[in-house]
View 1 (tube, helix red, strand yellow):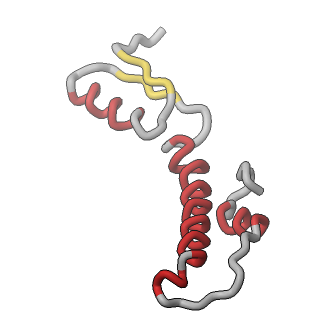
View 2 (spheres, one colour; view 1 turned 90 degrees about the horizontal axis):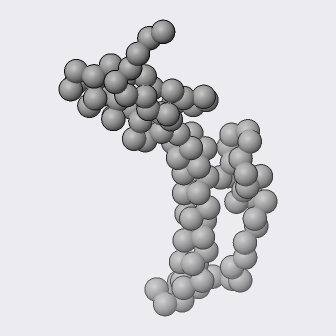
Length: 95
């Protein structure tokens, strides 16, 4: 059986840098990831969330347009269109 000084479960944002630092310190390290290196944020979480926040911000600015001397019509939200834009990958929780 192989032995390790450290076992890191999860190759999210902190896993790989931690593994690198421990390896540089002379430790034997195992990094375990069941699916995608980079974690939820990089692979599925943050991009859809950032897309939703960007759409909300655009609606907010459009509703305040008159304060900037810009005339607009009624501002509405098309959630299916926003979800489609946010969820360009399969398996997105918003679609």
